[in-house]
Length: 389
Image (cartoon, rainbow, N blue to C red; front, side, top):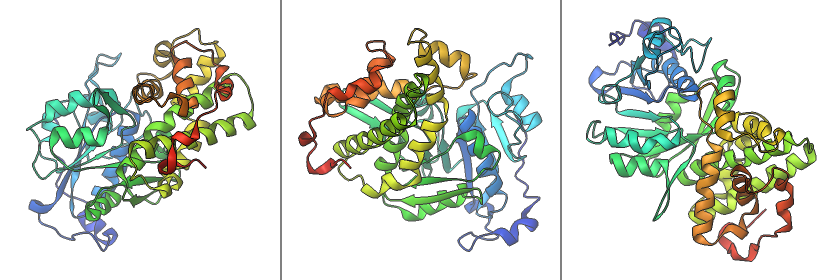
């Protein structure tokens, strides 16, 4: 196990950077401890952001634990050991220094047990298993934030990841989403993000404080479901944009698909959760995230390749070849959304979402992404809770 690095050698240097809301000189007993649960591309960037701030803010312990799903590298070395030796995630974020106060820990329970601020950033399909392992193993006063795009679909209906965390671990969970391509943030190119919170504005501001940097501007809105669904559903829209790119349909078509996709995102969100706010779709987590994900990102990239190959190569094959161990979220999310639509009788309301899934499963060719419009959605079924724009 790597030794602790929480001796605060930089406190004297950092005092001038403490914000007015920070507890300058706070005793160790009330300082917050942060653990990042996940160490992929985005998880490593999140750890880098957080670690740069814990050194400056006296209300946080310097050390940031990062749970690493242990892997053996081609060199025969363990990934967690290499991260701690080089201060770099050589597999998922090569060439980027995470910060000397980031400690990789392959033991999930050990990594999380002392933290009162838990940052979850793993592929969504692994979250149920992770939560089960952490039941009864975390602090009772812990707060969580999810950076995860996706949802669990159960017999009783869709369950957002933030809700899964709250229900299984018994802790409050905020969310952070936005127009965030991880590799760009890693090299400190300017971007924005949105924290969604339920009732406690104070904890939301603490998360903002933990993530916010001059190149990563974070704001908070009281709309967990709206922020989280934007982050989840935009990956389905990105697949549609990738099909358009792969078939070289042009920018006009792509812009139309992005607009229709945003329209379906809004309608789906408000049908599931009428409390979702209109304004959320104009935050970084909404329209900005749709734009950046449809212009770049792994879902668009793989969908482009899928369409170029006429749908003859599976997404599993493309993921393994193109993503170097990262996971493709859009395909599984499209399936989950489709299951919700079919169960609730909403398929005709969401022709774009439905068509994306049917292309992914081979029922329709990639060219169907523009042909779906022959099936005009019955907007009247949406009603006043989800007016289209």
